[in-house]
Amino acid sequence: MTNFSVDSLLASRSVTAGASIKVVQNDVGKSTSAPSRQPVYSSSGVTVTLSPTATKISLLLKSESTGSTSAAADFDAFLDGNHQQIREQGKNADFVQALPDDLSHERQALAKQAANYLLDHHYQEEKLYDSQTAENPFASLDRVTLSKISFNDSGLFTPAERQVAFLEMTNRDMLYRNETYDLSERLRRSEDLAGSYVISFLRDAKLEGTMSEAEKAWKKWPTAVQLEAIAVAAVRNDPAKLPTLPEYQNLDSQGKPLLAFMVGKDGSGTWKNVSVEELASETMPLRLIHSLIEKTKATQSEHPWLSLYLSIDSMGR
Image 1: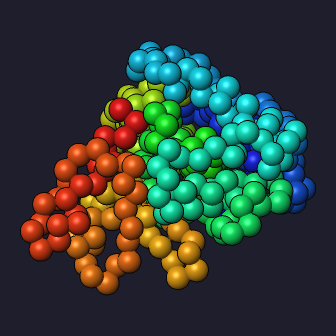
Image 2 (image 1 turned 120 degrees about the horizontal axis):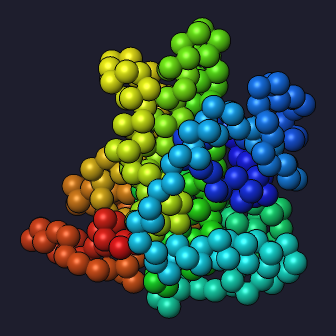
């Protein structure tokens, strides 16, 4: 999977719903914007182009706030403050060194791994914890879960874990945005102008449907239903004319609502969405993060250790 630089990810985090854009890193290769497109942002490692047609329509999409939360209100400051700390202090940044209140070995190890990954992968800095790997602990999670972790300011997750979850989610969103932009361009060249126009609204309807409530409040987008309605209206209320979007990999948990921690032979760990049935399997080497227990999820007598789990649906609300 293509990985955008941390500067690109942070610079491109705020996008107007329905905007037709493509993000290209400067080091990927030289390219010029088409005459019909106006550059709207330029920063180290990133160029964003915006379709004039989408710009006009997007100006009409002034969405009402879905309700401000502390996480949504402070989220930009949270991201920028963390970013600035690492730029100035590297692995000595205070927020990177924060660890969970849960002192269990598994929970501590997972938080340290996230801090190492953030430093090593996104900033090319030296690892903070030599005894822990620098692998991405959130690579297996779906977008829904990543959104809830990113905006969860309850203290269940460390600032480094939240930062990593957001950057992982945003990287996937940008890849998907570029895919849909390319599809829109192909349709435009084939003179399917209506199909080309609605792509960005269909895309953002899909993304909005996977956002936590705090992310929705932060983005202030129209709802998925409203965005889909714009697309349907553009094809003269004939849903059959709506184009088929590319697949967004790992968009939701698909019936696996529990959050668990899988332990590898090398001691490295990863968060994973699993079902109760999977957890009951004797062949799956899982250790649960007990600090996240919030409610009873399963009470199978043959597996009493399955009695309490965090329901991912309750996170971020």
